Length: 305
Image 1 (cartoon, helix red, strand yellow):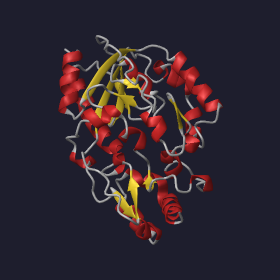
Image 2 (spheres, rainbow, N blue to C red):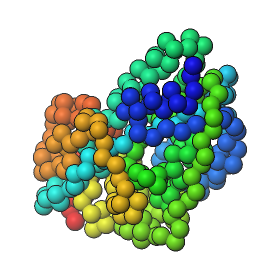
Image 3 (tube, rainbow, N blue to C red):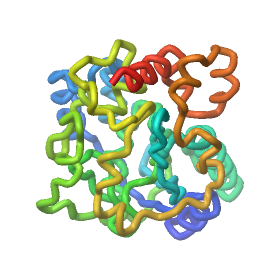
Image 4 (spheres, rainbow, N blue to C red):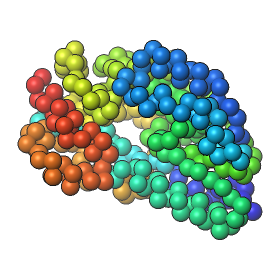
């Protein structure tokens, strides 16, 4: 019989340290908030965020038989720190190893296959931040944590260094209890952001180092000179300063998330890198998202302080 206990056991078996359950409901408030955020231009050049809003509001547009959302969290903090070596650019810790999509997709497929063997009537469609699903909204409803002032989902017992997956399923479960917001009066993330990209519970992607070094296809504005703290791909500042991570961040058991030499990149080496070398080195790395043109732009930006 498929129930909360079984799902929790399977989640742990397949590498997920967090699991929660929520009944399917319309995300009308969340979608309205997303629309307002987009209309303000905060999504910068990420036009894909404007698409499929009807599916984001109503997951029955994706799976008509949907009854529940199973939200899962997979820890990725390896416990290592940047060395801050001169002439090197820092990489966000989520991109130190193998692309999390590959890892999580494999585990989710295996988990769903096992569930279908247990009950052939089980239906499940999963997403790892690439589909028309509001992953953070469902993670909050399923009790994985609260959405912090840095807009990341924070768990009181394990911090925020975890990836989120959501399974839309036709099964019913006992609902999890959503977490309270424990940010309180803390402004650590807001005050630490060197480009002023954060307001409480809202991010302006146009100013975010992660956006500017990854999704951004344009040149990086001169107004950000000297403010990047040597980040060449992504940024962890708003998570590194969070007290919940400093006290409770859980170290991952997934070895593929550990650094394979991509924790920091030598700027000169990036500037002289050929496309074939880029493709080979970053074949299964999130760093390939920036493409060689973007990575070289970032290296040049950091080199010309």
